[in-house]
Amino acid sequence: MSFTLVIHGGAGNITPAIMNKEQEQQYTEGLKASLDKGYDVLRNNGTALDAVAAAIAEMEDNPIFNAGRGAVFTKKGLNEMDAAIMDGSNLAAGAVAGVRNVKNPILLAKEVMLNSGHVFLSGGGAADFARNQGIHMEPDSYFFNQSRYDQWVEIRDTDFTQLDHKGDNLKGKEVPNTGHKFGTVGAVACDMYGNIAGGTSTGGMTNKRFGRIGDSPVIGAGTYANNATCAISCTGHGEFFLRAVVAHDVSCLMEYKGLSLQEACAIVIKDKLVKMGGEGGLIAVDAKGNYDFCFNSAGMYRGMRNSEGKEVVAYYGM
Ligand code: ASP
Image (tube, rainbow, N blue to C red):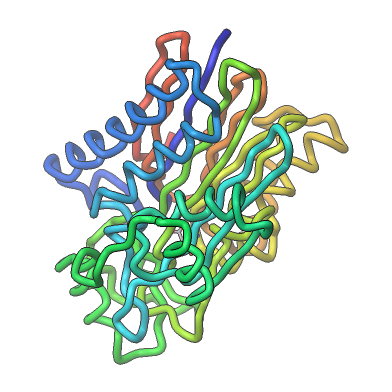
């Protein structure tokens, strides 16, 4: 039986002009390490759900990505993280928003799915649940990262909210690009049993305030999985992905209109989102192991490995 793992580490203004050789190597290593972790699970007869969690947890531990240890700073100088995971075999889902001090928010989202009786927990309540369940917590210092801090210091006295991979903000005015290109992370997988799963984890946007939550932890917006259609993980300007209900929209185009995975992804990312002004992309897989990387931004950190021996690691536009 075949299996496939697809991952992303964020989409945005990722071009050869902003990446040096050292950064390329860091991202190549970071993406490969995540592929290794997830692929090992699939190769050892594991489930798509566990592969997705393992691949994402690996990127959460790597400070080059805007998730877990590398999460960006909020207006108050804190790290508040969002994550979601969904099992396409039974439509079970778990998500957390605005959580602090959780080493691997994706593992907390999985715990919510499996053992909370709920789907979506937020803030202090989610942290209480994490402690009750023995989820690994870390002090604030674990999440401190100098370049991420500098990125925040540049805009903390403004009302700007910045995507970590673009000189961008919610009011449509450009703010100086810091040159740091970090990203939200996600994974989708199809396992040897023909089941699929998807997950996403992020620190959100630099300088976010008022408890802002993006698309990543919202089932149907940034994350979705259904064996009948596809598993999706998105990255990009969350406000647009929320309004376009991107992940579920791709699934609906397949379910109700009979479109292929690639056709459905292209309509939502390259047509609908572009018309709305939303920049970003997604990764997708279906239960036959077909996969897609689709983005309307300059680039997307991405990778894929399948049981046919194919491996891809790339960043720039296709
Ligand atoms: N979609 C994420 C958010 O809006 C950001 C990202 O993908 O980098 O929170």
